[in-house]
Every structure is written in structure tokens, then in C-alpha cells.
Amino acid sequence: MDKPLKQLREEARKCQDCPLWANATQTVFGAGDPHARAMLVGEQPGDEEDKNGLPFVGPAGRLLDRALEAAGIEREHLYVTNAVKHFKWQLRGKRRLHKTPAQREIDACRQWIEGEIRAVKPHVIVALGATAAKAIIGPDFKVSLQRGRFVESPLAPYVFATFHPSALLRLREEEKEAAFAQLVKDLKLIQKALAG
Image (tube, rainbow, N blue to C red; front, side, top):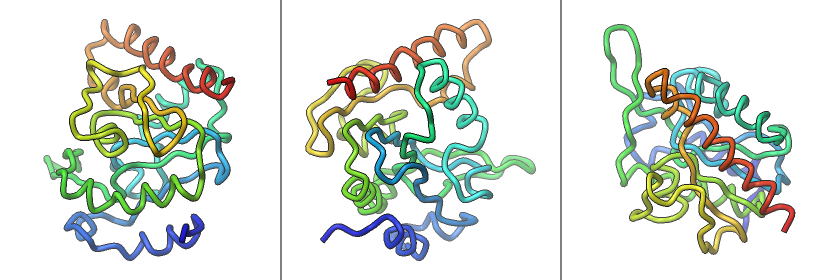
């Protein structure tokens, strides 16, 4: 039986199915319109998300907001979540730096992302970055080669992947503008899919 988001959120808060919960401040569950026609799925919470308990509120989230605005999409009409619900990090000096989740950690969180998809029933799912694409589309999907293309999926009528905004933050200054334009172009596919 499909569970409502509120129940999923409560259950996910207690999840200890992989070791990530031990070093995270809290579970970061999805947020946004519970009846959204489009869902964005990122990789995992970052440092600010881990502290605040909300997805996409750090630097990558602010860049995503700019890209959505440029694409003509209002974030309040989306449901935004992550494939992995706990922040995986390593300490460097005084900073907690992102560390890519392992496949077993992605698999442990699959129950939560699939539950969110069943509860929201989005028409469009956008995987942001490689980890999200592996969780949503499959382990062999390559964002660098296949981004911006709709793929067949039992999860929603329209599914595609694009870069994670955090990838743009790591680019050299001269590469950022073109990458941002590409992200905006990909996000406009949401409107194309919703228009039918």
C-alpha cells in the first residue's frame, strides 16, 4: 500500500539501513508541492541541507533556483528531494566536504525515493547528477553522454537527467556561463513534457 508523504517522512527519520545516519545531523526528506507534476531528484543533502533539514537550500540550491527562474519554472510548484537522505561527508580542516554515496547507500534509500514518487505521482522526474540518475534511471546511465534526453521509465511518463547544480559550482569561471545555459535548457524540458 502506498504511504502518504507525512508517514514516509516520519519513518525515514528513524532509518538506519546504512551507516550514513550515524554521522548525519538528521534525515533530509523531500519538500515542496505534495501534488507536484514535476519532481527534481538530487544526489544527497549537502552541509547546509544537513543542518537545516531541507533539500537544496545551500549553494547548489541557490544556483538551482536561479536556473529554474531562468527556465520559467516556479520552485513552489515542484517537489524536490534527494536519492540519498543523509549527508555523506569527510572532514577537511573545519569543513565537512561532500563524499559520493556508495551504491549500497543509494540502494538503502531506494525505498524512500520510490515511496515519494508513489505518493506524489509526478508526470515528470528530473534526475540531477550521476547519483540521482543511477538511482532513478539505472546504474549504467551516463549523465555526461545522455543528459537532456527523455528515457522510458515505469516511475513517470517523462524522465530525464541533467547536471547537478553543484557540478557547475566546481567549474572554472570561463566554463560556468555555458554550463548554466545548458542546465536552463534542460530544465525547460519540464515545461515541454507538461505541455504534452
